[in-house]
Each structure stands twice: as C-alpha cells, then as structure tokens.
Amino acid sequence: MTSDTAQQQSFTVTQVNDYIKSFLDADPALADMWISAEVSSAHTAGSGHSYFTLRDEKSALSSVMFRGGRGAEYLSDGAQVIAHGRISFYQARGDLQFYVDTIRPDGVGALQAAFEKLKEQLAKEGLFDLDRKRPLPRFPQRIGVVTSPTGAVIQDIINVLSRRYPLAEVVVAPTQVQGDTAAPLIVDAIQRVDAVEDIDVIIVARGGGSLEDLWAFNEESVARAIFATKTPVISAIGHETDTTIADFVADVRAPTPSAAAELVAPDRRELAMGVANYSEVLIDGIQYLVDERKRGVSLAADRLSAMAPDTKHPRQLIDDLLRLAKAAINHTMEVNSERVNGLQNQLRALGPSEILNRGYSIVRSAETGNVIVSKSDATPGDRLNITVTDGEIEADAV
Image (cartoon, rainbow, N blue to C red; front, side, top):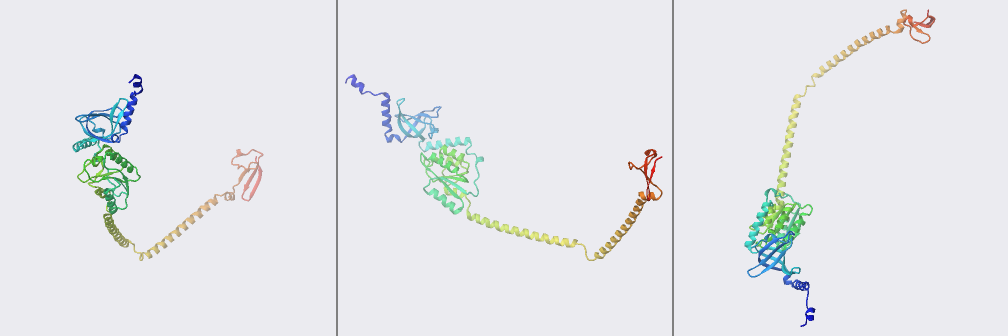
C-alpha cells in the first residue's frame, strides 16, 4: 500500500467520533435501557448536572444525569441503583457515556432506606406538621380526583359518592399511577385539578400493590406538589397497611379509595334524618314561643284590667269639676275686663285732647312745626301756632 493510498483512506477524529455516535444512536436497544449497578465517583457540578460512574465487579460505565433528572438524591458512592437512560458517544472527549434520566434504589431494602431518608428530610422541613393540616369541607360542591382513568379505583370513588352525596360534581384528573414515568404525570395532574375553579377537596388515589408499584407516591416531587396545593388533599394510596410519603404530606389519609370517598362527603340519608330532626325541634321551639307569648299577653291583660280606673262613678265628679272650672274662668274674665277698662280710662285721661280740655295748649313754630317748650325756643317776631281744645290760634312771639 502506497502512502498516497493510505492518505486517501484516512479519516479525521471528528468523522470517526461522529460515525461511532451515529452507529450507537441507531441501535434501539441502547436508546432505552435499564442498568443495575453500584454508584462511584459521584459529584454534582455547579450547573446542577450530576456526573458519576456505574460499575459492577468487572466493568465501569461513565454516566451523566442532567439537571432536572429524577432521582439525583440517590446518587452517593456505594449506593446500589437502577438507572434508566440511553448509551451514546460524547465526541468532544471521545467518551462512551450513559445518559441517565431516572434513578431509583435497587431492591426492596434500598427502596425502604430511600423511603426513610426522604421521610426524615421532609419531616425536618415541616411538610408533615400537624398544624398545617387543613380541615375538609363539610359539604363539598366539586371534588377533584387524581387517579388512573381506568380500573376499579375511579369507579369505586364515583359509586360511593353517587350513593352518599350525589349533589357533588366529580372532576377527574387522569394520570398514570405506576411506573418510572408516573411521578411527573401525577404532579401535573395534581397541579391541573388544583387550578380548577371552585374545587373544594382533592382525592389522590390508586389501588394496592408492592412497594415498587406504589413508589411514584414516594417521590419527592409528588410530596411537594401535594404540599403546594391551595386545596385540602386526601391521600388514598394502596391498602390500609400501605404507607407512602404522600400519606404523610396530605391533609387527611384514607385507608382505601372507597374510604376516601366516604370521608370527603356526608351521607345524604344521614343529612335527611338530621333535617327531619331539626324540623321537629324547630316546630317544637316555635310552638313553645307562641304558647309563652299567649301566656304573657293574658297576664298583661289581667294586670291592665286590675289597674284600670272606675269610669262610671267619677262622671258626676267630672261634671262638677267642669262647672267649677267654667265659673272660675268667667270670674277671671270679669276681673280682667274691669282692670282693662280702668287702664283705658287712665290712658284716655293722659291723652292730649283731655289735657287741652283742662285749659292747656300746645305752642308750635309756624315755620318748623316744632313744639315750643321754652322761651328760648322762640325769638320775638316768630310766627306761632297755638293749639287749643277747639282749634288753633296764630300769634307772634314777643
């Protein structure tokens, strides 16, 4: 082989890495796979991405989980996990990598340990505090249900509510309730139904199963979604012996989905009996008040009758009093009339005409009409008018 031929058949590093990547990405088995392994060299960068190695007794596989992946809290050296993702090739460094999107503990023992760890963490944060638990509404009008749209759970809830309290409207937020992709779907369903107007209470429910089957309700994201709701939440996960993180966060835990439906709404038959009892009590109370008022009116009438004056015998006395009053009024009027006449005579005697009749006269200046009361009010030669009882006399002042 000549050097020219070798030169024609050579490839760049980028071409080789691109070919390897395209070859790996084209394999469907590598695009969706689960790997059970032990974690080592785990660390989280400032960007929030997690870098670690998955290994067993013989081999190791470089792995990365970008920020937003589920289960990063389980990444610690020595942890046994099951990781889901895809195998691909990072051309920049020439590394074969496992791109992980989901991690969960491997095995029941590991799951239980993860359960206890998350439970302790959320308890310290106050998500389980009793003083934040909200009471359930007594007469809910709209009930939200987060569960699978198929299966016995939703039917059980609807049947119980239809029998006990058909007045309520049921709003279903359908979701997957099992599997590694269920948690974000449950979170979305809770947020959707919580945003519906006038929802009074939310039931989060699913049927029984193993710890692995119920694991979605032990996810931190589901717990925080329940904690963040503005609406009271009833958890009804699995059977009575099953316990999930969601049960601790919810405002009320029901042992079964059917029990949740019974807790959330009253029984219409009990309500009808209560209304009937209240009706009887109300009627009895009204009748008692009416009887009491009748007795009160009767007693008042008797008291008024006893206190009423005798109107027959005093009539003659009233006539006598009227006659006396009339006589007194007439006497008073006569006395006042005589007094008025006397005052009139006095006023008449003091009038100017009476004074003139007694020989007096009134002297006025002919020019000004002013009354001359003093010698100094006139000068010799002034014309004067002298008023006497039967007319006027003209004169000159001297």
